[in-house]
Image (cartoon, rainbow, N blue to C red; front, top):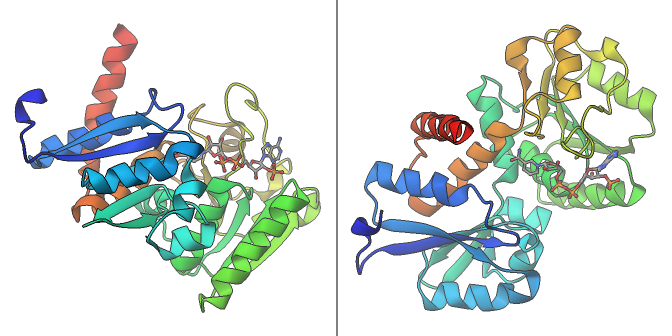
Length: 301
Ligand code: NAP
């Protein structure tokens, strides 16, 4: 790695805290090596109060770009020169491109789900989608589905505050001329939720329910009769790899290839960012093979 760093090497990185566990440096540096690009990607601890200084450093050091993770996504969005449509609607940024000192903020989390669905042979265009959750991930997904031509997105969320926030974002999307039917409900309207899932093309689970270690082994979908062989079920949770929702969907009529966990979302949101940084497609097949080899090696150690 260090032998290829030169006076011309361009710097990129990820900012947030905690950051040492981030898989992004391995992923992007693999891709730079793959293409023989003179770039290096590092992880930088940064909390919300340090975002402005970090952005000034990005300009000063002419960094090519950066990814932004918790808790800095909203503060970064407030300090961009320009925002992509998805970042503007969601009010958060996970990717920054530096074009000669002009910082443009993008949000590729929703793209991660849409591209992963595409990788599994499913498009969101003209589809009826039920979305569980109204947090950061859910809102990025809702906006991306609307931007990519979904026919409808019906959102269910636990708190009324989340429902109200989703509704406000939905109104902004519609005011911008994007045609997608969106409606918003509480998760406690259980009968309505199950009925909507029964008639949906795609169910996207974007709450933290099902996540290890705290919410493992539970699912918000309790009526097993909603699952059928045409329904695509996407769960953003990647730990565990197969959630209770996915187990239930598989046991009650959904096809294996239509039940997808959140591991690919990580990869594909990165692919979206890599394209913004470089204009190139991320070598996803090669990266998947590399990461699988690394995981196997780490399990042996
Ligand atoms: P967030 O902004 O904190 O939102 C959390 C969401 O989960 C809210 O809608 C919240 O509802 C809901 N929720 C939490 N506990 C619940 C419960 N017991 N019952 C019903 N709803 C509950 O978090 P986020 O950033 O959106 O992340 C959500 C999940 O997505 C996390 O598990 C995260 O790990 C995962 N994620 C995965 C990827 C990936 O690459 N695969 C990327 C981003 C996030 P309220 O509004 O009622 O609180």
